[in-house]
Image 1: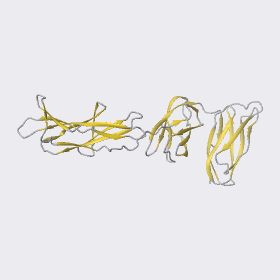
Image 2: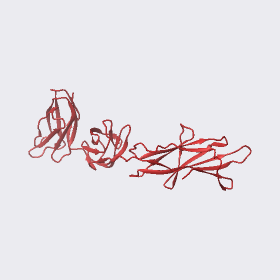
Image 3: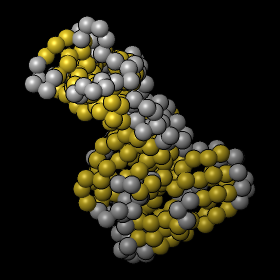
Image 4: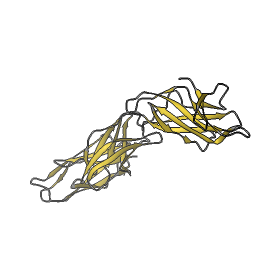
Length: 299
């Protein structure tokens, strides 16, 4: 499609402009769009006014995508620049579009004339969207879940319905997080956020917290330092007691005891000792109960 200019007289008769329209449309959309985790891309154009007969305040621009025309917003920071935020359909990797520009010209002592410019046809290459996946659709408060994807960093944070969760960077393709306190229910949105990313990973059903609790909920120790951990149940331990299995992702940094809440008891304490410098987590499991995760730093 070649750019063309049409005059719209007061009677709306059409005539092609052969001697110049007084305005030129310049496409400022990059041919290859930068990555957008949200799938939104900005299409932009600039109207270059070449004749004084053009009334600047009459300029209005539209972009036509797949036969649909959308109004473009004026960029308040730059004169004559128009933008449209396009939400690309999933899996679409190429978008073709053109611009329509309407304005009014008026020569001295003559009636105003409405003019419409239709630009060349352009296209923009869209990058593949990053797919994020949660390993579960249901989790209890205080338990952990995993998100897989791409290009993760230690700067990423996970939010559950706008509440920041304890985020654990595992690798560039994996993040883990601890379910924060929420009133149990359905449809909690999980987002990954950073300076370059704000993307929904999925939705969770959140169940009540485990009847087993541990204090403190975070440990910072020095090598050789000991710290008491307190374990508590909402109800008395069952027949023969409740065995608690404690594992860690930093086995060289922690000396851990075995833990058993005696039959009929609700609480027990155990002592953990720091060893080599490291940072990781304690994973606390008991039969029939959700896993608890405690961040640990040996410094």
